[in-house]
Length: 97
Image (tube, rainbow, N blue to C red):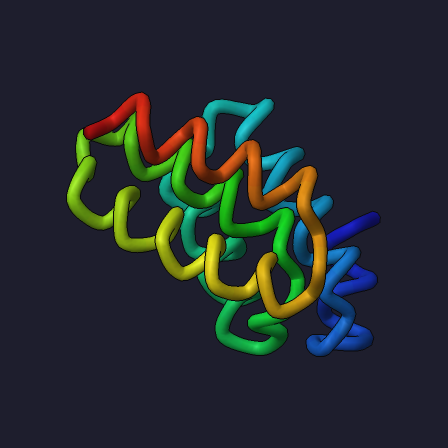
């Protein structure tokens, strides 16, 4: 159903984000990564996507890209005034450093 929502409205960040989380649950990490990257490309202010994309990338062994995503997320969450997400991103980044 989420794939249908994304197909109907490619700009729907929430549906694409939810689809990525479902793909991850189905152990389809590469597809989940691609969807999270698309969320960020289309909607850079969707700050929750940075945390999950970083986690997916780190899990796939791409620690360098995960760190870069966390850093971008820190910037975006700061702009958005989202201190909770900013704190989670900083914690995740610190754990990889």
